[in-house]
Length: 163
Image 1 (cartoon, rainbow, N blue to C red):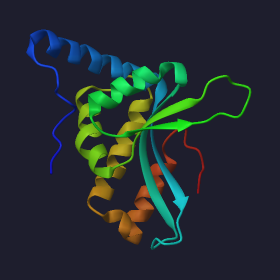
Image 2 (image 1 turned 180 degrees about the vertical axis):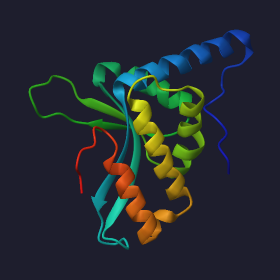
Image 3 (image 1 turned 45 degrees about the vertical axis):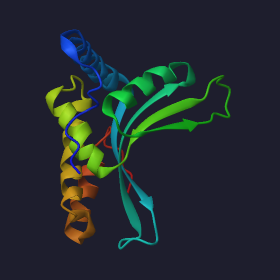
């Protein structure tokens, strides 16, 4: 099964223009509020005792849940996840997450290849894209591929040392 592009429920010239405008808006929103990340989590059932966990995420407060629902509908993939808050904030957080390597490769990456990010986040996207390409080829299951992805992940998101 091949997923070509985001949902195309709209039809006609006006709707096409609205989709293009919304696509541009999404890019700006992701530039400010989104994240491309590759986490490494402990998982004793895997070959290396850890698991590579790629994720495209946009986080918003509960008051902006409607926007996340629109973005999810636009991409026609991913999940909305509630992150309950137990601090002094009055609203919970919601995350729009795409974790499927297939959806990342066939929907999210092609979208951001066409609609380019304008901030430093573009660098993270380029690195993220390389890691997803390696995972799509199952190279993360080899020691050499595993190490390549660890190096890529360490170059992302302000180059935080995570391993």
